[in-house]
Length: 278
Image (cartoon, rainbow, N blue to C red; front, side, top):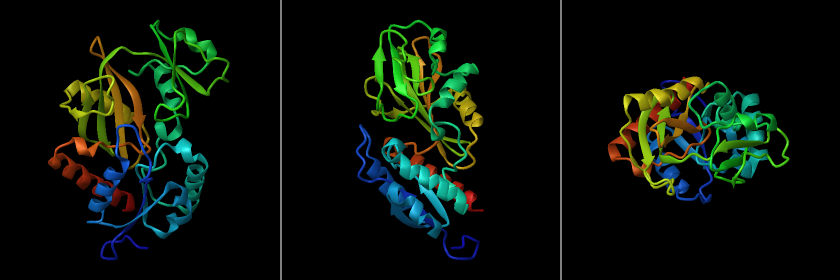
């Protein structure tokens, strides 16, 4: 395959699990829409994440999108990463991110470094560093979609080996807000005004301070090309705290934004994939 200017159109292997059922989200609808628009610029073929390693060498680029939590196909995903590196494949998002792509260790690291994140520890000896709270959240470091998450009255790893679980205070927040970026460029923001309805989202007009907050984490990350979603919560005191920096396959909630915002996002994504191929 050849993506050079004047040659055939670049080919894209689009990795998705159209059958995956996510709470409050329609992965399949979003990826059907995205592939329909990417076909305006690329030759596109879809495959399941379990098939990506075997197929990737036949394409100019591999775009990993709504493939579901990696923990459901961890062995296949690990094999894909190894094969992609061996083959020198162009993968989008690029495999150099250090946020969710690499697990949840970054939350511990950012917390230790004093970034505005929900305080997070992963060792029994550090439990005393957490602020006092009415309840605490315990979740697997390699978890996703709230799998394995539980609440406790006291910060407790319950005998799990250090480094396998995360412990955080349960934050009494006003609402959650997500900021969406392509490469380093902000695209749009959405917020969930009701804390108990995470995926009932509305367009959100971020302040200058909000964007500075989100850009700080995008700048911290080492992702060369791709889509990032910065998830944060607004505390009762008005502070934003990072909940998650999703740099693997962030759901985009494109059905929640105006058509012109959707069109602008797709155009920027096309340019980003072209930049990966340059």
